[in-house]
Amino acid sequence: NGNAAAIQLSFDTQDYPQGNYSIELIVNSNDPVNPTITVPISLTIDNEIPVELTSFAAEVDRSDVLLRWTTATELNNSGFQVERKTDGSEWSEISFISGLGTTTEISHYTFRDQSLTNGKYSYRLKQIDFDGTYSYSNEIEVEVTPPNKYALYQNYPNPFNPNTVIEYSVPEPASVTLQIYSIVGELVSTYTYENVNAGYHKIEFDASNLSSGTYVYQIIANGTTKNFSDVKKMMRVK
Image 1: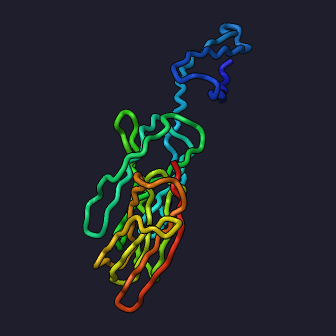
Image 2: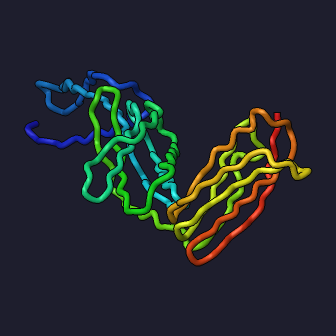
């Protein structure tokens, strides 16, 4: 009858696959000439879920930096290129962590950057899709600082078979001797370092030629202002 009307349609497309759809909207009116009007509608459903990074954080753990990040959703996510730079340097790739492709589940990722020297470090993530497109996360900065005390840490893993890592810290230049004994006091290995810089240090101990049992490791450090000694136990298993 010459009157106009605005019609708004809402669709819940959650249960429909992606693609193109055709819809016919049939309008009945009181127009005697055209009582029924069919309006064709084209609809494209594109339920793409981007890679939504909800958190990205860094934590200093002695001479390591532990990175953690979380995604709420992922779409065609090949993975994350972990990049690092220091003052005056360019960004460089240090690792690649595979993604989960496409998922609507919350996903958690971690990466440990190990055995760093003292200084400031910046990190960012380069998220890469399977088709090669990419985007960057925000940048975060941390500082690895020298220890303020002598310490001998528990080896890891423990128990171990056959390798384990023994870590110690010295707050000043020192000469360091690390000795490993059997539980009955037999000396089985000795590591000697004449000039160790202040910082955190690691020794990888290979016990392939040792039998199962409890062993004792002792550190003797002679620094410029202080001497230090400590003892801890570890368990070799087969």
